Length: 202
Image (cartoon, rainbow, N blue to C red; front, side):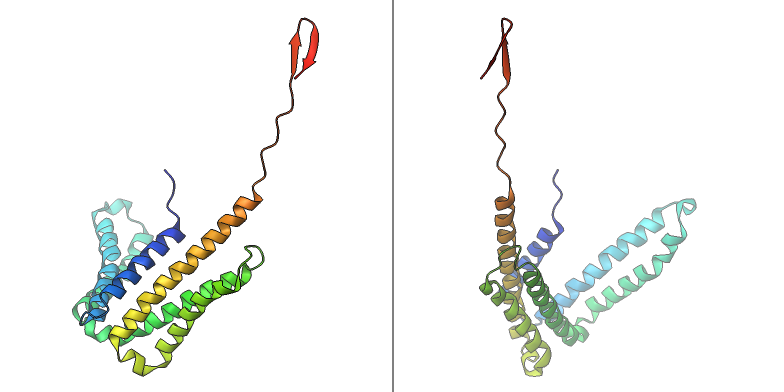
């Protein structure tokens, strides 16, 4: 079975997140629901870890298992607070979305700059990631923009689609380079054929 590429999985998750944010950007309290989802994501691995430690026989538990209990309990409590008091995290989540856009845009710009020669990157490849960076900066720098939650969510969703578009461009460029570097198959050398004590080369 072929292993699923981590890069592909990340892009699929961000693509789905972008589509969901665009579709539901006008839903009231959309960020509160987002906080609750994030809280559940914090709680799930913490609960799984604590259950695994609890059901493990006491003789099989190591100091590392006990050491991991503290952050697991912390993640469980933090996730619980995010679910119960989601409204307290609205402003923080908006800032995190701005930081996310900034990081994603910078990642692609740096990658394209480093790969410009090897992948023969064209100038217009930089348009989408630069737009993502600008949206991230505006989201962080303009309180007036953050006051409109639906706008922030819509812009974030569009930027996530732009991120995936840039990833697709990079993948196609890498694929073209790989195809160009594949060596053609070498012709098979003629083999001698023995016929009645004489050698004939075909």
